[in-house]
Length: 59
Image 1 (tube, one colour):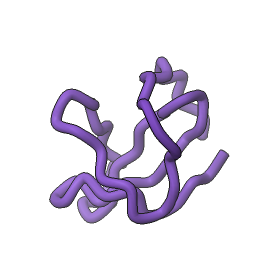
Image 2: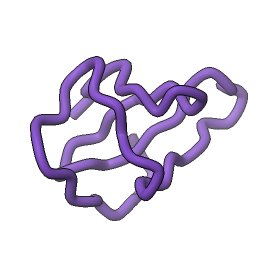
Image 3: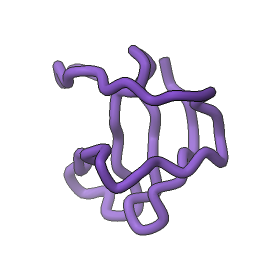
Image 4: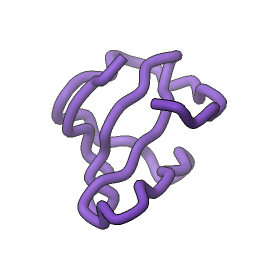
């Protein structure tokens, strides 16, 4: 939550289960290899970096 990450624009609704395209850069979370995050449409979301699927919309 403390990381200042620029928001990327994604056409459509960002919800749990949404798969993000390869063009969206997923940022790693130290000591959490099963999770990544990205800010999409000004919402911070947790992502499974292997499948690129949104796990949780945090903000």
